[in-house]
Length: 103
Length: 455
Image (cartoon, rainbow over all chains, first blue to last red; front, side):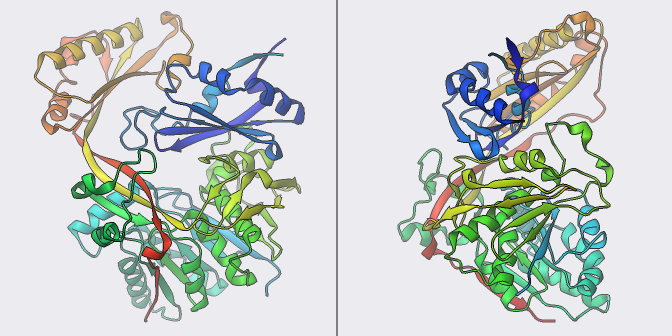
């Protein structure tokens, strides 16, 4: 069965220099099991092809049913240098929630 | 010792909702109003203002706000703590005191926290063996020294606690951490030892929840955002802090917004790196230890926060001048809006390359199609696209190239694809690019200064 990530999780993203941080939070424990299993660094790297050009770091926060991703080399030089419309990566959490997962 | 104190956030950044701090002091009882004004870019803007006029360099709307709320704060015994002093906290405090005097108010104390501005001390710092290497690239700062616009150390809660101990009603600081503004009153009121790292971390976590204003009370909430009531009068967050380190995050009852586990969790994840090591000058907080409990009625209990000893460094934020940039936009309507915008982009790029110009980067985005999610954007049938805004941005060390780019946008209206509009604002002008340089400095090389301004 295919599920949409946006149906089981929400999140928030922002900038840390040229890196973006994308926090994804599951609405319940079952959702956390799914994102923990399926949102691997490889899968997220593949998803952000053409957007993230660096290494992806992944951290688990079971206490918040959340994962935190650091997308290095993503914001076109970061905050003030970046020419991107979304120079601070504010919409990247929504971009990750576009993902569909086979469960 | 008080059994509990209420710390209210009034601003999440310089430019935030102007009415928010007024609502915080009028719509319910609070003990402290904390306001974060500073981002990395802000410091360089303020430094430039100070160069033009040595009496400026702080958030100019802060004295205006204080004038409005001071009588209320004094009557209700609300203390104000803010880093809106920027690169000139002393002049900011002086302006506040003078305005109050003019209005016949003199029964209050303003404290100034400074010493964070190290722009004039770089030589002695480098001499002492600290090269202020860029935390991301490892490069020493010396090569960029001439181009530096600002250099500030992030102080923590300690100097603010000292200011409160001196009896200050208002504390105006330079660059202090956003979290320190909230942690300081807890240390001061509850007599916490600064070696109690779990307590330091509890206050730091509360500070992180408060530091972006309404982002923890329903603003920018990516969950069920439609369930947020009364956005127009959104309540900013309030931390009810207890001596054991427990904190309840809430808002004034009669204001809008939403405080639940989801809105608070989103803010906890905002702009963090490794959650187990959230580094501040006061402690290293472990965000993976935080526990949240829904209490109902827009109240979330935050507890069990763990942390460890702080690092021997302060973070330094420097900014330096790094060329120029410019952004041009034009809007194309149906039919074939996207095709027209793409054609215009191609024409513009050809014209630019026929001129002898130098650009480090030219970036094209199509607003209404892919400017947010890039390659992840869904393909759309062009007949269903009503309009597209072409957005082209350039960056270069060469001012003349960026200036000439600005002259090439308007001609596209009469010399390119049809049904184009949206050129009312005039030629896009080059703006100076200010780049950011993060570094570390051993704590013993800088000393915060706390002074009480005489009335």
